[in-house]
Length: 255
Image (cartoon, rainbow, N blue to C red; front, side, top):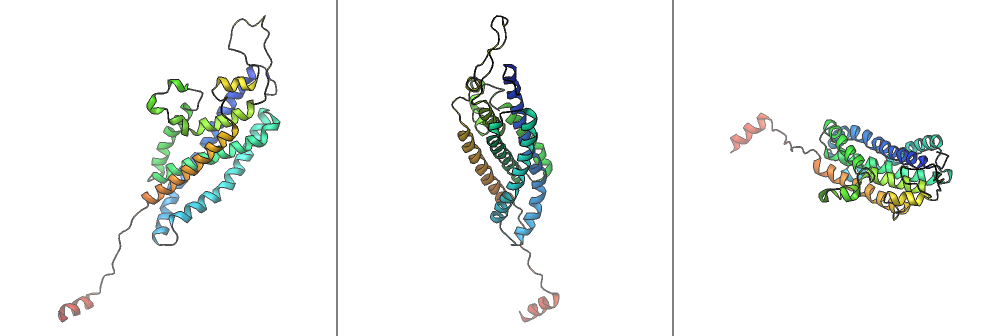
């Protein structure tokens, strides 16, 4: 993608869309598979009053963040070097990838917290992933989304991940104009990256806006996951110690 011809625009859009989808799958899949199994162990320990749900969840969220950041950074280095995107935008690219992966992992925690087993969580995962891909901001125009579904793009993981990566990459780019004499038909040409962003409805959105939305999504999914754990934790009956037969008989005689 080192060239700035018109065909590189679609190449960049397609690549960034696939990166957003792949990062979402990477962040959600592992958590959805393992978290429901982990809940059964935690339920026994919390019922024994070893610790409460709140400290456990805070510790889990904090402890997994560095590993997710490391995996996201390694993935970013490999993809960025192979794709040939703007070198000056690499640090922001890593930040956007980290937030996108963390938001996806938080969504996976929420699905796992409200699922009673790994099978149910894995059954929900394809539906959630497909909805995120459909309402990613470029597959369906916002004007054509039914009114009762217009809220879905606002919480779309792929949508905000894709927008952040796209805004970061296209801002400041200029593209070569095709030869008008040879060009008789075809898609419209773009002179700058800002024109491309305007075409996809991202002209009024900044990287900082995406960072704020991703942060709100992470905190919201964490809070919902905590509530899911609190409401769906296993409850046990209180068992009373059975009295020996001798004690029972002696009490009956006394009465």
